[in-house]
Image (cartoon, rainbow, N blue to C red):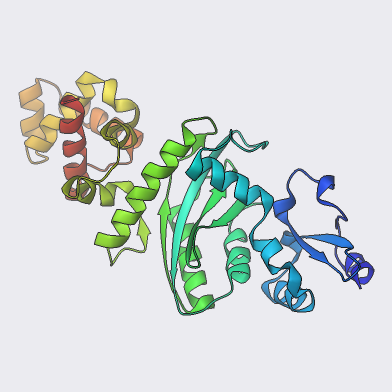
Length: 294
């Protein structure tokens, strides 16, 4: 039967040693222990479900891949160096699924379809996990909204997501991972009405709960490269203290309104904190105050 399946799909492999990315294939085995790896990109959810029905002994093999375990050990147990990969940087997308029963395999395929092949889905429990995204593509909020809508309609479930920042793969990656995971957990607890969570929306609750997240890390994530620009930070702080009154701020700083607008735009572009918006202004102000006290 494996030979017939191999003829149907292009690029099938007969051994995991033939690829550096076995996680991109659905591996099935017959009663004679022959192996076939089918590219996941060529399979629909229905086809995967059928194959796993025909080859039921492969379900755990599909979900608990060796590469997944290596990444999970590196990020949570720090028992080894980072897994061998061609990726230079990686970003994490954390997720939870609220439903009685669903197929992890189908859910995994549905998530992967929204990204390119440089992704690994890792489950930490029956209903939660994260996506390792090794691509350099930026994921727009509209795309994540589409992903959430698709998953919820397909699985009749409430899905919640947290978007991490792109990180270099080095020994500091587990620290970033744990900090982002803590942010997600706080967001899940206090922002029940939010389905796509971001650090700037969670930040006030992290402070209120005195969450175990390094303050230096928080200010670096929020202020980005602006934290060392004293003139820019002073301008933003004054602008917020003047209740976003541009005329009053310009007078206090003895600068032209055009110069003020340039600095504000520069800060917004660098941090993605729109300080003309009350919530973002509050987050920026708290981050600046925290940074000044360190």
